[in-house]
Length: 525
Image (cartoon, rainbow, N blue to C red):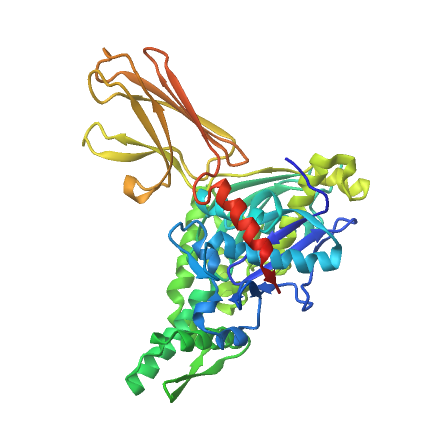
């Protein structure tokens, strides 16, 4: 792991807001304000005139822009190789657009703390390999040395433990482990994770989530309700106008906040010279979004089951993410777990602060005495150990001997503790088979078409006389840094092949370099 000159920070690259934080010399994780003195920068981009972009504008300003110039919710497109926009005659990808947000965070952060050289960037635990690689590439394009990608619930747990004085508190007797369920409902993604931890050891036991579930889905329910009411009165659908939708998205976000604090609010839609207003109560809002809450509870139930615990075993239920401020979220979770959710950490900055803690742990371990922290802080940080699990299964495409159909055979199930190595023996399909292809998949579905192919390992020139059913040994290994290695061996003749999959796919190294040069040409404010 290489550290470049400059500060090492943590970055929460969010769907709706992004935050940069750093661990100060006394060991306190601090969110760094942007140039507007806000700790959260909207993950909203205006593609303005040639060579000029605005990151984090006021949403009303964005609503007045041509929708073709507005980029939002880009986190949901990370890892989507088909998604792109055209700006200034250039085709730009989600990685490049996310890099503009990171560039803005870095620029504003450096005005407060000086040069930034390294960063840990957070992702939802349920981000797959392609999305994680895309996030890492975005950092490179922005000119940031990404030393690690950390999962958001793990980061939030670090902040929670720090807030309780339980992090790195090395004493004569090790404290008994605590079990925390981290419920992270952000603007665009949802994760729930069970973590067992002591002051010096963090172990993720199980995790699950949804990269297409977040606060913006609650907003969209309000928008669709208002649009349907408008259409019923005027016979026109305001959703057909991108300009109107931009305005409504802002208004519905404000309405959701109003319903968090009050019992009712009024929404008005103006479209095609016509206007219609509706009054919405908190109860109506909760009724129209009840299925979204239930989706989060179903995931919570699944994770507890995978962790082999019950809600009674939990020491804490920790809420993270701005969307957890909706009253119904806390109520539903308390009804489900029987525990009052903990709101001691900031739902807006906890993830970035945890990323800063993780960054400091890495710095203390790898830079040693060269780190910026006080010696006592450095020793505590260096003593902390973390264990993760994989959020997606790793499999191989194989033929079912009973049905003859091709299936996705899972070699390493999701929520397996890392590092892990698994070996199994398969058989050749025909007499005289000359080659074997091991197609490595990511995902848990039995249907190969429902999972992602992330690599292929091939053995060629097998002995021509091999009979059908000859054994082929396959070994999968998955380390804590995300590297996946696959080895295949003909057990008859001893011929073997090996591949290493390290976040491949998406942009090539040449494309990342090209986008880096392009990003350096743009003025970001």
